[in-house]
Length: 278
Ligand SMILES: [Zn+2]
Ligand SMILES: [Zn+2]
Image (cartoon, rainbow, N blue to C red; front, side, top):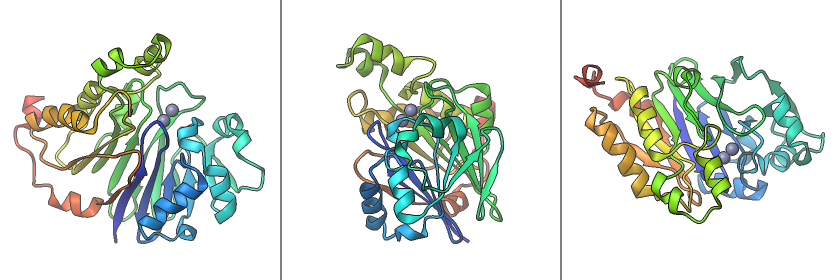
């Protein structure tokens, strides 16, 4: 039984994450062109026709761009909230197999249990997801496009073995960056994106003895830097005893082969002092 995660790419120009067990392969989001998704899968030697489903988190183009064409070309069902599907109807021709999930109800795809949770983001019905493998119990959390980590977001992301968390911008780089004021306010606002500092805080809150890996994702190319993000989040987590890997997903190249089972097995038993220090 295996459970591997490959981030095909992440950032404001496209997001897609492959979850791959020995039984089931799904993509969370299809924010690249159909061809680009195929190319990225081919680079990982994953045959496109083995993808069982697309799960779409919200309607923004960087999460939906290729969903229609990819679904039609390879006959892959799309799981999407009803309101989200209506708001990006232009990407769909009607020929796709569409399943509307309820944003408050878990659903199953093969041996994966998908649990959506509502996020605070400027989209119609934005969600994050946790994905749990039946049998192993391994749990992966995906939370990008996250203006505010609300209580329910933090609750949904509890006890993940692998966390894929947004670290969108460095606050200073955003303040001094090239965007107009209105865009800066949107990004930094309650319904925008998580800064490195906020991502570190969320990571600290989500630490537990079984947390075996963290991936920072959805980095802004203008207002962040992978090393800066890793430093900002890593420093805080390591101070509190986190010893696992901290990786950064990039826009243009896949972050491949995160073996969730192997990561979880490598976690040493309780990181002592963790809970007393928090
Ligand atoms: Zn996005
Ligand atoms: Zn978005």
